[in-house]
Image 1 (cartoon, helix red, strand yellow):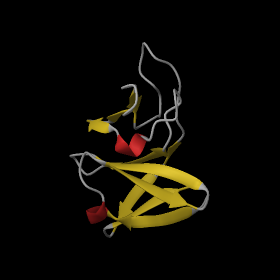
Image 2 (cartoon, helix red, strand yellow):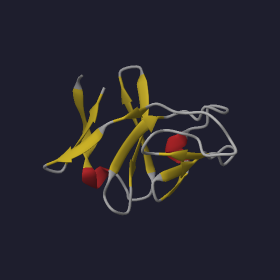
Image 3 (cartoon, helix red, strand yellow):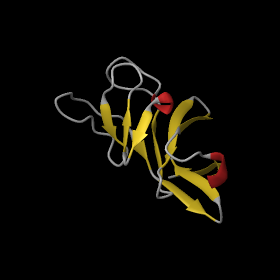
Length: 101
C-alpha cells in the first residue's frame, strides 16, 4: 500500500468536499465537523455525479445530481437506492492529510 500526501487539514473546509487528483485517480475528500477526513472515488455509481460537489451531513454525502445518500465510511449507497463507491483510508498527521492507495 502506498501513502500519498494530498494537502493540509486547513485546505479542507468543514462539511464541504474537495476534488484531488493522484495520477489518473480522482478522489473526493471530506472533512466532517468533528475533523474526521474521508476519501472516496469522486463519481456517484448512479450517473457519475461529482461527489466533491455534494452536500455533506454527518458521515454522509448527497450526490448533487439525484440526491443519492452515500456513506463516507464504507462507500455504500443508502436504501432504497443501491450501489457503492470505493473508499480510501485517510489520516491526518502533523496537520498533513494522507490517503492510502
